[in-house]
Image (cartoon, rainbow, N blue to C red; front, side):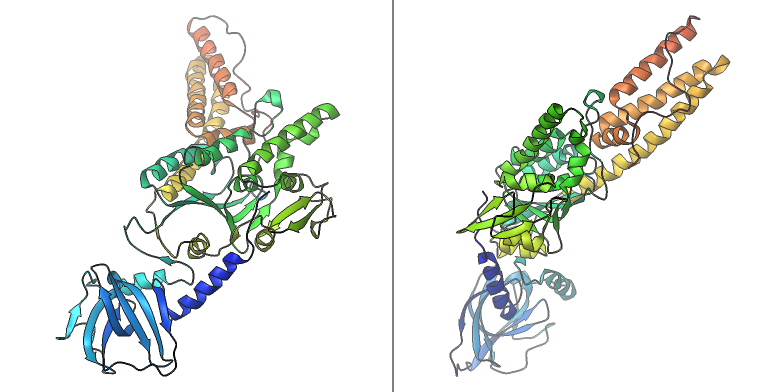
Length: 494
């Protein structure tokens, strides 16, 4: 059973927002003097910030990288001690008469330029605006003491855009960059874009489920030394089981988690006529699903309710733990319908401890993870994933053209042109087979749409080779090279 501390993180976020409402974003407040009648000193120091603000008060200490500054707000008589990064300060004026007009940022004989100040205020202002947030502060630094976040995009179609092949390359980049935390950004709606890799013909086209386990293992085995968080932007379908394999799970406010009815239908285990076989297939599938939840420390009742519509779901709190029931006997009825599978919205998922919290932005997420400031890793993950999607989809389009060419060439392969067109038909099949071997996504898509696997292509290529050998030796060939212009098999158009 997964355990959560309710409401604590929300309290932290609220308190932080209140503080940051008084303190400029990106800075840390150490103390506040709210005593009535606090008097401003005769002289003061003035800081000209990159975002255009002018801060009056007293410099407590300075280093090459930061300034500790006691900011005095005369309107409300509040002193706030700030820790300011030197890179965000354009100019410092020290020991000027209190209340005097500050010097122009460009130049002043009494002003001392801050060490490391940028010569481009406009650029600094833009950068500061980009970093403003009510969550944690995103800073631009190479300081290894500042926590680093590495974003891994998982968006698109499960099995093609999202598969283990592309994340093997991402894994290598993570190992090189060594971030503090890896955030898996999941956005996938299988109910709207369904395509799952299939097993061989002997297993009647059942979904090849192990490919998703292999993908998760890349993170949980090969990258186990890094803290990992799944941040769900939206998840409907088999992606929800993938999401629940992480112990730390957060969701965006409009996110959904569910849709496992699609996974159940796509597996086909309920279509078996023999009750014995159907029961065994159902048990095998549910064991696979529960394996994901086991990794994330979730209750197995969630798997049953999210996959099988005949189960209802209710929850009972015992202290800070939630006990689930596959009926309506719990204190809170989560899903009372026996016609649909259970699905969670972000708010309910947080309240029921399915998720650890709700975060709209990466700054919000960082704060919930316990980081008051953080830096983003300059990762290659976004490019790796985008390039893979673009490459495999382009390769698949070429494969479709080559399959049509194959049928056409095969139909023309007679008389004096038989050798010529058989050779071209063979080349078309070899090109498709090569693309399938290079991209798992192409292999899955061809299997889904045309019902063809690598074995089919290998056999057809060998048949054509035999026909060519026979033609060249003037001997009759055994077998045929497939039907010219006919369909390829029992595939389905997505």
